[in-house]
Length: 366
Ligand SMILES: [Zn+2]
Image (tube, rainbow, N blue to C red; front, side, top):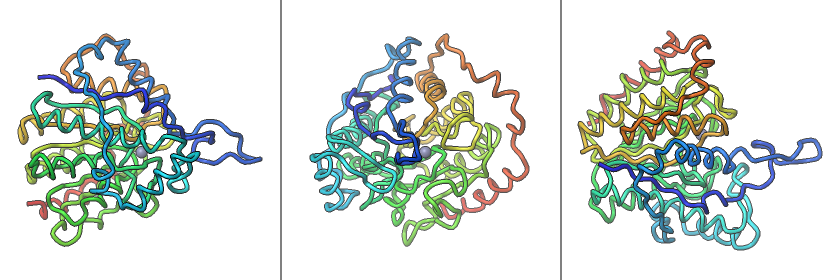
């Protein structure tokens, strides 16, 4: 069955201004590009086209999420603030989240694209789907945008489907190198959504994503953080999947699996210190597809988050799309050979200790 793909040129027109990675320019910081700029995303889409795989995907047209739909998660004053700044000349949703004129509407289209893909899967039009959108969403909280994220695309789409489509249990598996704090916050008191995040321990946001954050009230046990030490390669990530993520999914038995998908855990990302390769992303995708086939009719949705290597995000993304479609292209990963020579890519003892600590928390998922 088909794989859906959401893209819109307007996603590339979300303006994050003239920065220097994550520092505002000043008389001592030379202006350049903000880390969250269109290029890695545009190149991902372009490689899909060059590989021929784009022709095999089922295009899904994004729509604009309404303010009422966004307000299922975000507060009205926050929505109004972003809307007003966007209509003027842009602004900043927090210290790191600049946006230009019109970004409110593009953020509506980003959330609405994720909703459209969700609907297409639930309506049986496609089996799985990838939403290549910006701005990203997994750091945004109810009343503040954080970490380049304006609105919580995945949280809004899940709330939409649970409110209007009768969708029951949903599991999110966030493999972005940063903690999925916004998705966690959205469902912290709910057992209707199991939120899982694998991330580099202590990276971003500060003091966020530790093992003790397990949910609250009825939601206790249904938030599972897997903080990993810097330097983890495919060995640690696949072990975390095998020993924590997949057992958690099998205990929870979701009706759908949703992935906030960041490629910033790759070995060459400027904003993370992990060593995952395109092959690692491929294998994680395969494991989630097998879990989805076993538990929820293959229903698997991915919505784009981080990933800042302009050179490597396209190859990680292509590997994921090849796996989702079951179609291998002729494109080879240029980083596979050099990255294979780097040490400590297999599971290391201190990484295994971190994974075991997270595995101890599985019993509360019922
Ligand atoms: Zn990230």
